[in-house]
Image (cartoon, rainbow, N blue to C red; front, side, top):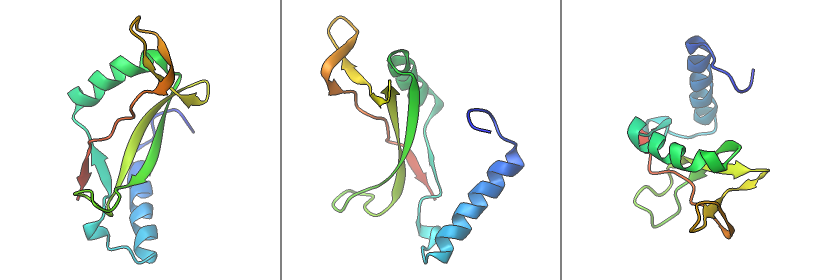
Length: 112
């Protein structure tokens, strides 16, 4: 089942199960992130730039730290990987650099 589209009904069931699970843990889901959205143009531009150097895209769950304007809310982090490691920044020649990981992508809009 991994790596392919799923039916809308299954996606809806999974989303509902997540909200039910978090609610049972005592989280007020009316004040917690249930989804993160990105504009198509923004995320596609980033993907088109970074994915030629990657062989997988990992989606990490994250939580904004204290002091951040969205402190306490959850988010997702899109992180490109190559051979099981984060992709490096490109060098001046456009190839992977030697030691600096490329920045992951976030800046999505949390909903609600």
